[in-house]
Image (cartoon, rainbow, N blue to C red):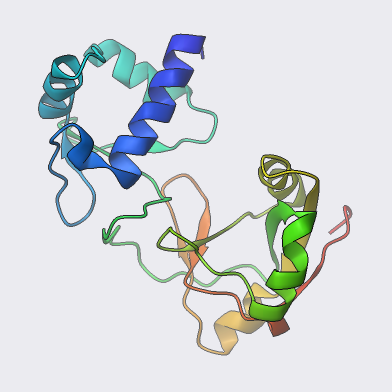
Length: 184
């Protein structure tokens, strides 16, 4: 994506995940916003965006952060919300192991308390080590943790898969965590 669309993607993440009120946008209970209203409000707030540009942001975003509804009338963030939304995702049995990338300075607290969502609604997990490493690198010197997701699921912890393939769960207790090796 070009730099304008990257900046737009980041701004849309802020609006659709965290601060719709910043531009007066109303999200429904599942986090959907009317596209025409979004475009109108963005223009009113000095961030004009065309429908074609919006579709490019959705299509070309490497993390697939957004989804347009099948009827083409609404948009929402795929995951990562700090505001209350119900993505209406069905519980899904996870693979035996998922991964979480973080900064090395966070590991002591994580091994003591487990993975918590912080300001978000869910803990985000990756299906592969490489993706988790990229995520962790955004926060400093990266480390990847292996999550015994199959065992967690068997113990009654629900998992969900967002539209963009990110695995979600409410909390990962410390007993289900271990350092991951690159060959995992």
